[in-house]
Amino acid sequence: MKRLCLFLAVMLSVCMAQAADYPYLVFTNTGGTTTILSVENLTLSVSGSTLQVTNADGTNSFALTDLKNMQFSKDGSTVTALENVLQADGAVEVFTVSGVRLGTYNSLAQAVKNLHSGAYIIKQHTNAQTIVVR
Image (cartoon, rainbow, N blue to C red; front, side, top):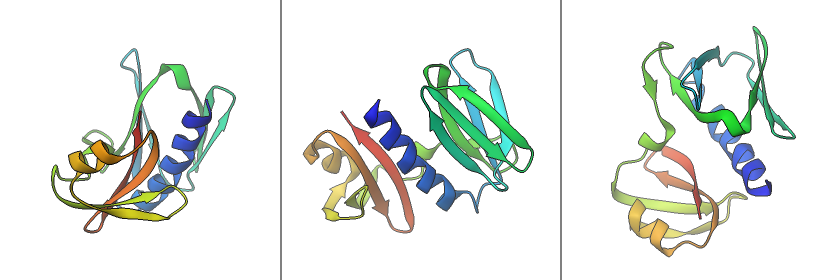
């Protein structure tokens, strides 16, 4: 549960950085139901096993056990997944979630191979994303 909370906290910071480019955040549950929310005045918080999402339109709750993914969207229908932000080839910089730079690797695969279990921020050119290594 601690890892999940840490991951969600890091994702929140990434979400806030990415929100300027994508006006919608799309949630999909394990049953395939999709909820599209505006990122205007977006706040995410975790309470127990529930993700609370508040925006300019109100508050929505999602059970973490039923949440399949969370993705940004430019138009509310076409979704760009966070895992597609980085290219497979190309150098990446790796940081801890507290911002300490761990090093540079020739590829994302090489970085993941050399990291211990935990959450990391990966930067490639002007893109960044959070990963969890298990």
